[in-house]
Length: 463
Image (cartoon, rainbow, N blue to C red; front, side):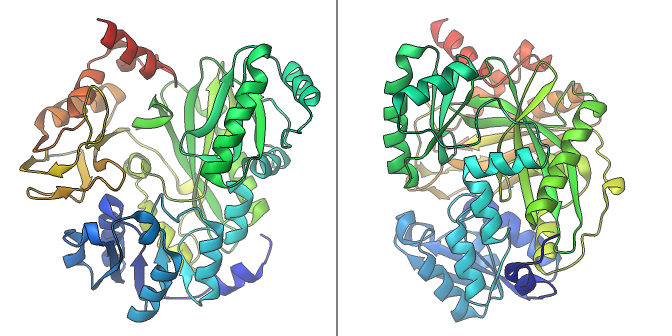
């Protein structure tokens, strides 16, 4: 593995206090992992989250700014100041907010702290979709057809690229993510308008108008491969997930493993991901995202952070991914090899959101009643309780309902029971929508792709 100053700074460094630069259920999850490792935790909050229950379970709790995320959870100076005030040795960014911000990772390291995640250089390489694609192609990871360069300004040159790829194509922001900054172009006469709109959206959302173009796959599944790497040249992949159940490019339900993919097909892809990590000197956990169609994998992006859906991989692999992430950040040698990784059973995760189940508009307010399912093979990751005030300022995710069982059919049955047993009153949630989805025959048979849920919703509304 290449040796860099960033790696040298982290290697062998130990810390006893972690500042969690996030909120909600992931703050609770990281706290639990830290406690089990014997580490102290510092929770931060905005004015809107002063009453957050995880504040009382942390060793320190600091309010760092107003309710606006830009002035609190995205305020790098305030977070670094809080870390200095309480003597934290490391910062865990969770997911979202600053978790994939290379400048923040660099600022943390320059402040003499440990960023529990990849180095700034790795985040920068993989955060730009063009450089990520180039790195993956060099490592032998299969990619979606299309050039590994930004689109030129010359309209004629852009037209030639589209013709070489073949319609339909998809235009994407090089610095994009989260389902934003992309447009499908089904035919040539719509190309230039799509580019103009996407370029402006990319400039506003990501600070860069750089775009690239790829072949649009019409019936793919969204498959992920989870990796974990240390600073000593060791890496492993922990199985695969199917995240095809999406609405407006936002994941709704995830499962592990992805059904119907033979080990001899996925194995070389997983090993190519490991090789890619070793080539760029990657440290920590990460997720390679692929489109899968007609037996072939196509790389689309890498998430250089902990994923919302990491629990399904934890339950099937038996690896506590958050603890592994923290140990690697301490400079420890990865305590598993590829031969140690065995995935057993099947797991589903449902994202429970505070939103109307029909319109999907966010629903803020006070939770007046909460009942959570329990029992073998059922896990709930949440930060809410009866009396909790759901804020309008942040993402609508309020809980993750996860189940595990020996087979996919048994796991689906267990999720149906768990969804029947969860009760949230006082606000609207997407629970009725999830209950209906788990009764769908095509989903039960595993006959779905990334466009299926949108089509399913259209049919329901038309009925």
